[in-house]
Image (cartoon, rainbow, N blue to C red; front, side, top):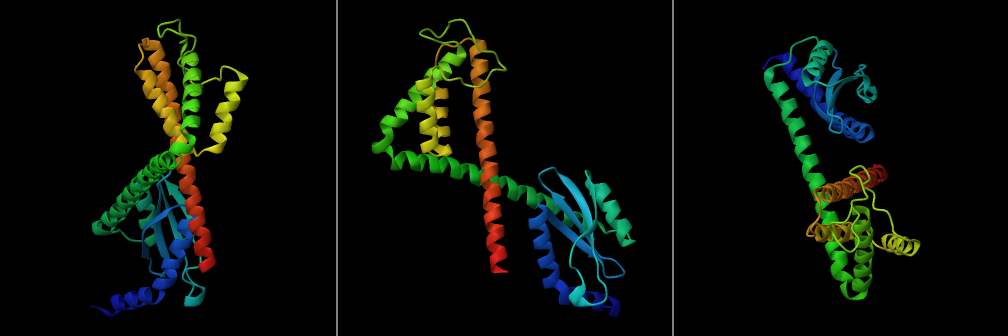
Amino acid sequence: MNTATEEWQVHEELNQEKIQALFKRKEEQLGMRVLGYQFDKFKNIQALTYDDLDSTYTTFTSYYIGEDELSYKDFYVGEQYEEQAAAIANLEERLGRTLPQDVIDAFEEERQATESYKKAYSQSILQQIMGKAKEDKAANSERSLGDELAYKTSYKQNLLSALGVESEPKQTLRATASDTKVEHTDDKTSQEIEEFEQKHSFELVYLLKKEVINEVKQLDLTEEQLHVLNDIEQQLDQEKEAYAQQKEVAQNVTTKSTNEREM
């Protein structure tokens, strides 16, 4: 091993704790994942990050100014790219050298790991939502079974009304495919539904609505009515996805606050 290589390794080892703390802080602040970094000839860090929300890459520089205590304080000169190849080209320009393929492969492996974690975490959140709904139903089965049945009846009445179904499933359709919002048929029904939804968790309300939708699917509906029903179900599932994302953001904020208090 030559002396120059040993010097770089010693420099990295001495600053590793500071570098990792910088990356952790910037990942929390920017909502990005650091895929990797390289030192340029001046010992500045040239980093490549990935934002899994919009699938973009950003290159950053963190400067070494000769004194370890004052170096690697922040990210500077960020440039965003939609394609990984363009971001790596910019990183190589900053470094003044071509990156070996194994380094580029390591960037991609880290990106794939980030995507896999995101999918697994999102699935975990959705499972928590469904699990909590089932727990709520089990814990409150005796006490609130009547309330849940009344809610399902009211929601089903509104759903059938939106589909144009009164006493017979094949009646003239009054709703259109774009009109997917379930309107309440009267003030009393509207109030009962709103009161139930305010008192109970989103998870439970979602589960009850899905049960009603599945029941209505068993009716002899026209193609138009079934299309409208599918649109309503899709809108409900989108609300569930949005709720899961909000819950994920809230958990991240809580984790960030806890970490800041511990620092």
